[in-house]
Length: 68
Image (cartoon, rainbow, N blue to C red; front, side, top):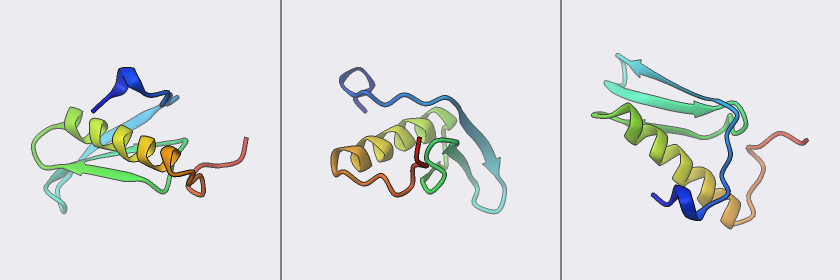
């Protein structure tokens, strides 16, 4: 993860434990189409979500982000 090297800024991130998935699930209000999961760590789920957002931004995909 490269938080310091990126410009990802989130107004809010929600993380919850999903019993059915047996994993922590992370979502952002700014990127509702992206979901990250990790079986062991809520922080790892957030890190994965940030990496997903950064990857989308680097490839110019903004379909999951609402218009400003």
